[in-house]
Amino acid sequence: MKRLLLTFTFLTFFSLSKGWAQSSCCEATAESTLSFADFANDEKFIANHIPPVPLDFTPKIGKMVNIKVEGGKEAAIFEVKSGKTTGALILMFHEWWGLNEYILREAERIHIATGATVLAVDLYDRKVATTAEEASKLMQGLNKDRVEAIVKSCLEYGGKFSRVQTIGWCMGGGWSLQAAILAGQQGYGCVVYYGMPEMEKEKLAKLDGPVLGIYASKDAWITPQLVDEFDENMKIVQKKFTKYSFDADHAFANPSNPKYDKVATAKANELVIKFLKENFNAPLKKPTLEKK
Image (tube, rainbow, N blue to C red; front, side, top):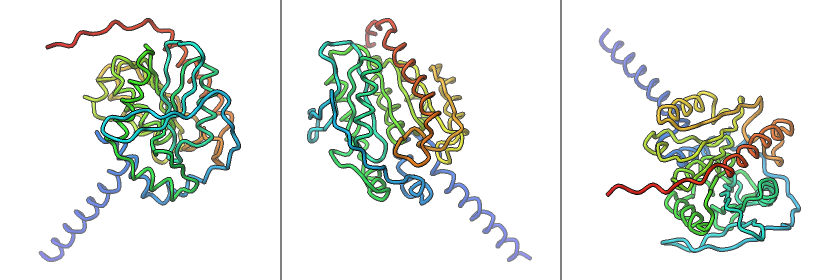
C-alpha cells in the first residue's frame, strides 16, 4: 500500500511538472522576445509557416543604408523618406523571415499612407530566410543586446524627428513593443500584429504612447487568453491599449502566407493607418526633467 501511494505521488508530480513545462513555453515573461523564439522548437509553429512566395519588388522610394551601432558592427536598415522633414518616424520590424521584399514593399506603402519616414530594421544583418528551418535558426540566433543596440541607434539616427512610432508582425510584433518601451518619451504609438506581449509591469510602465494590437482568434500561439492577460496588465499600469481580434489564423496579414486573409488584412490596415495618423497629429510632448 505504501509503495502504491508513493508511485501515485510520483506520477502525479511528474504529470503536473510536464504540464508546467508545456505551458511555460507559451507564457510571456520579462524576456518576452526570447520566449517567442522558443516557438522555433515547436513543430506545429514551423509547419504553420509556409515559405513565402518569391516577390519581384523593386524599391521606388526607399534605399538600404547602414547605421553605426554602439559596441558592434553597423546595422542595415531600409529607409523610406520624403524630401522634407515631417517630424514623424516609424520603426518597422520584420517577421521571422527577415527583411524580405514583402517588408520593403510594406515600408513604402505605409510611408505613402502616412507621410512619415519609415526605417525598416534588419534584425538579421542582411540574412533572409526562404524556408521555415532557416527562419527558425535565425530567430533563435538573435542576440537581445544586439537588437536593443540597433533599436537605440535607429532612435538616435532619427533624432531630428520629434515623434516615433513602431510597427511589427509576428516576431517583429514583439520587438515593436520592446522598441516602443525603449523609445520612452520619444514614443507616440506602437502597433503589434500578433506579437508576443511584454508582461513585466515595470517595463510596461515605461511606455509613453498608446498601443494598438491586431490579433487572430484562431492563433494557437499568441492566444486570446494571452492577449487578455496583457490587456489586464496594461490597465494596471494605466497605459492605453486597444485590441482587435479577427476571425483568422496567425500571420493572416502576410500576403505570402497560404492562410492570408485579404478582407481581414484590409480592415486591420484601415485601423492601423488611422491610429498612426492620429498619433502623429498629437501635441508635441514637453520634455520631462529627470529627478536627480
